[in-house]
Image (tube, rainbow, N blue to C red; front, side, top):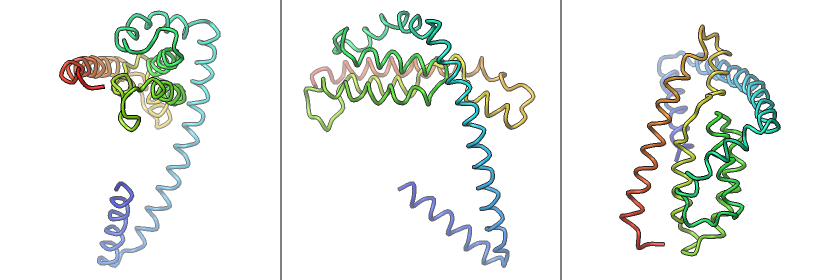
Length: 196
């Protein structure tokens, strides 16, 4: 569907440019967009490499493990169906720890592992997400971010005078988002408590 929308937008732009006898702007815009895409991608590689290095240092220093230990009681409360020692618990904790530190790209592999492990515990229809999977998806997409490292890097790359100015508002916005997701998850769990 998204591909069709993009195709329609491109064809509409070409048609309008042709109608106004100004078709060269399409070529110019395409080349400028491609150049900007390459520049942004290279900048992101540097940012992600830097923060993955910081993440490795934090992991070696025990910060991730400490964060995981702090999150354990909350995770057990949010996912009562998952046994304590199940591999899904570790993957969930590492995923949320990476998200809290603003390392969304580093969190993705752990998120995929968590989903795979939770699918093995899914006793209902395998084509339908279990309660734990729904909770994890809501939490993963709304997780609080303390260090929005990727956004800070993008702002710095584009010449922002104060790239870290968004930290406070990011913490507040993501905290509200995560709180709302947890409340709605608990409400829907009560509403659909008799389903698998």
